[in-house]
Length: 154
Image (cartoon, rainbow, N blue to C red; front, top):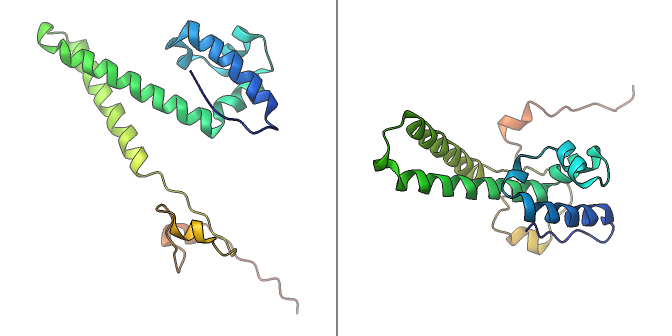
């Protein structure tokens, strides 16, 4: 079950969550493959565009990623459990694909960086947060994409 505490003003997402959870009970894990149009067709609620926004919401998207990783791990363990019982090339290819997928997910988790440049001082809580790094200069990989303008008049 997808359990997200949407904000009070996100009433449409709250209702969509109820519809999604109803589908989840009947169509898991196949629902993970449903497009936003499929979700609309199965629920007859909201619009396909609303369902796309729902699926792209970072909270929902993160849940999808975790579920896919969980399913991949389960399939990996199943393949490893039966590896000595089959000589199938398809099984070894599936094993390789699952290992690559899980490795990529782990690398993405480690490399998930967010850069926020601001002239607003950090709060004491923000300064102490373990994922905050205060930089004295803009990193070179970002400096090329920053444009500056001279607004001085002659």
